[in-house]
Image (cartoon, rainbow over all chains, first blue to last red; front, side):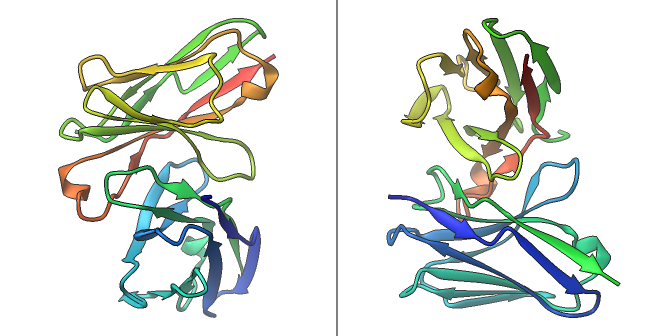
Length: 111
Length: 116
């Protein structure tokens, strides 16, 4: 079956690194995504990784994939107040199929 | 093009009434998706289209829900005989040639349904 799980809340201090974790069940997942939803706004793709990769870095963002354990993480370096949002882990079999989302992790930043 | 557009943004209806939502995708996008999101949850897949063909429909979707995309452009989602459990945000997303290598979805801001 298809299931994506992630913890509901994360609180970090401004300037620290945030690490949001996700597990998925479908071993045939080919694309893994992190979407961001800010208050009152639609979801936007933050970054993605193919299942044949184990790491992807994009400026302050680092995505790690452990395919054996079906574990995905998103690290945000130097977390800022503008990073406050809900972060959704998601997976799909191909670029043309449906995307299955997790329940989202609400990231809050404390001063 | 300003992105994916959904109408109405908010609909309040009485239980038992029918409601219809419209989604206008980004013009060059051939794939269109409908999701439902409730408070504290992630988007739940409902159905998706490639051009005018409905390729998949969630098993969780009751027969009261129907979606169309008659000309491969805009889409409508109709809910018949609404129930209070249908109250949710209905999200539309589209994807197309630019996302063929990544599957990136572009989401609208959603249509919020409140069933009294």
